[in-house]
Length: 416
Image 1: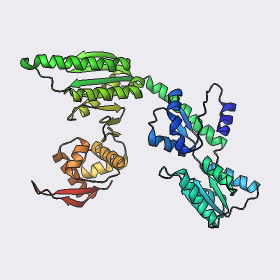
Image 2: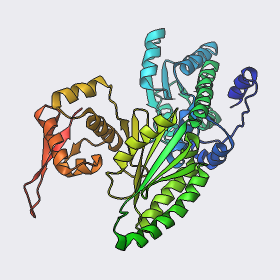
Image 3: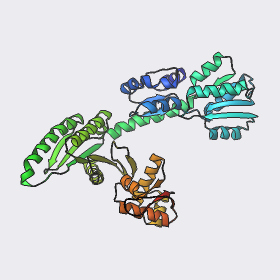
Image 4: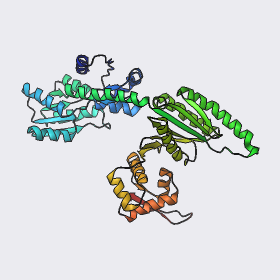
């Protein structure tokens, strides 16, 4: 932290830096809430701190972390050279294997043995410490290189040959510049126009139900006004079913307002007033409304209250649901376009399936699962799976037998 503050203090006038220091990465969550509330951006001193925070907190401010790369490793090797420390056999953590291999090849380093434990969010600091200790106690290594401050201090206290992998000045400046750019970009993006269209479901034009409809609409309108006030928007009603909110992107995307909108959807479901919503962003009102209309079309296919966002060529939704996906409406990825050409499947479906597979870490589906995930009919889902199968992008990995009705469903393993 002292090194970072020194670099920033000498080169960045007008930048206010507030240090939040904890001894161990697993203590970072204790102070992160205050840190995020008080600042425009967050600069993590290492990927370990960042990943620990991600486990327990949602980061909604711009952030960057400083990796321990080849710069860090070469600085430490140079330090060992100056101190004439023997380092033929080393134990090293945090640095990726690929980076270590590149440094060995680039500078002709010749380790007799090296043991690596690249950073993983699955491992605790104590696991890294134990790994170093076991190797040292077994006489397998001459020196230890670690990127963790607490591991370094514990090994140092035991009198073991240990060196700290620090970021160098170049890394600090590069990543800080990225963070400043992200903060400035977010400011520009936040000033963009946002249009949110909301349509009520089930509003009838039957005179016998008219009173109930008006009452239900009035109750919903009062709840909606609270949300509109918080996003500092203007509300316009079009007919009996459609309402349009004009606001800014920054207000719509604010964390507290996301919570309010989620509560509005919950209120609608609890009070049998289902609605669907499309949110669009743009430089102009025309562009934002056009995007909102695209989002609304997707939301209208949901069976209960729900919402989508369209931002340029990217769509996200259904919001707040476990099956929420982010994918591209207009596809330019050559691989996806090639698969689309060979299979006859719409590229939008392919990019959505690809996003689904990445999110769920799953590649096998039957027609029912795929139809629910893509919000399409089961017959359409069955046709898509058959096209994957017929054109070499899928194999039958099993059959699901249903003794009650119909024939067994094929379970298809998709390969993109």
